[in-house]
Length: 171
Image (cartoon, rainbow, N blue to C red; front, side):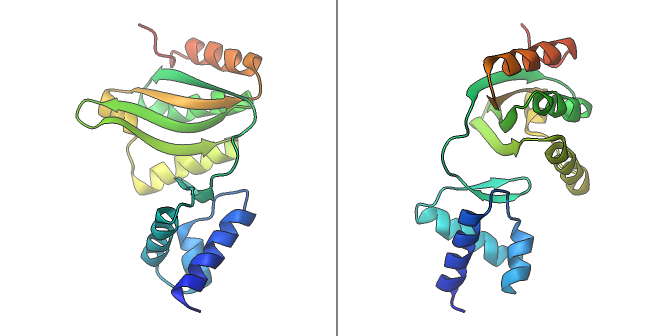
């Protein structure tokens, strides 16, 4: 198989998948290193394919998720990350990203696409396994999330529960 054939197969796999596909799984499937897959994905992106890198793997961006899009501003400790994410998904909202306003680099974001408690559990496991720190650690805990919620009521419930938990940022 040529390099171009492998990239086309990877792109087709992204098109068929509704869940993220990890670089490690692709590397095993095509008998190449993870770094080769990372390079393949970078070249697919450069060719105009909208491929998102999430904590669980790559995902081809398609049409916008249904629901209402809102942003929340939060402030919490590292220990409260799981609680925050669970509150959001418990009301049917997807946590699309995390965004910080860095004093040097400006807006920095990370794509999350967390939709369920299972996704939260996998995210937290990866944070632990990689001994990673959150982006919000760079801004003393202040950060934003873009949420896609099924309706306004779900969004309002998330805001209420985050406020009750002391997680919602209030000036």
